[in-house]
Image (cartoon, rainbow, N blue to C red; front, side, top):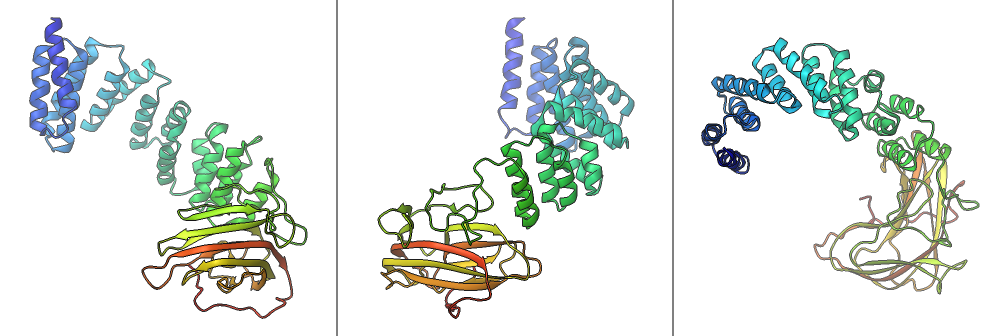
Length: 424
């Protein structure tokens, strides 16, 4: 008997691990497995699955009854195995035997009340039956057992409630550790007020919660709401603007973190291939340090060297001033500094000329930008754009120091816009 059972198991394993087999070959394999091991409920369960897949994928509806019969037999052999009852409920549901399907799914839930699959299957069954409230009651229980399934459950709720954010939040009502994720999902779908309402239900958000919801607001262009949330939250080591400037660490007197995730008042510096970005203590325009960038880039590519986003007011004029110098900088497209509306670069933008390759001494640059009625934040960015030519390397060094962004009447000098510098 043990040998026959082992042969049956081997046949089932072969069918499972050989996806290229035709539906007919798979059925022949599990048929032979059952002949060797007819009293093994797992072999019967596997045969039922193969026949069920054939009925669905190969449109062999006559195979559905074989699947049902096998699962009924497996349930008699192993009445305490929730997996068999769950599979039987799903197959019966597919066949249209709804009352018997409900009974089988109920049995599976009683055997495994804390298992995601049993609650999820019943939730789907009730949803198809028109019991929306009962369905999401089961999905909430499923979610409690598998929090990572929130995106899946959210998509169901979004479709069922047709994008009604309040109804979705009420139907899911996830545990507190998932509320920030739900808030971020609602915001990402454009339901900002509903997402913020969920956010306000969290009494003690974690740093990860704050980051998640702030990023969702930033990604949807809601910078004012993002800054309010971020400012009100208990964020560790929140940077502050420099005196007389909206920017923080504009003189690079403090260290900056590469790949920073802070949304405001922090330099986002992302070193790439051929870039070396450091703080230079030997050559500063003012103070103890400046930012030095070394280039050894062979390709013709656009890249951002550093950027910082700050809150700003609509319909205001802001001036950006900075000092820069270069050494042996060679390229047909050298970097420049720009300031623009963080949500839409076409709403407001100003840029310096490309930094001079001959400027071995510190030179001041200043531009002014008028914000639009909808502007909520400005981003300052040190950027390099590609050349028209396919091959456009850049090498050499540049230094940046003393960046300031402030409300003003206008720049001290006429703004110089290099026609070769265009928004990426």
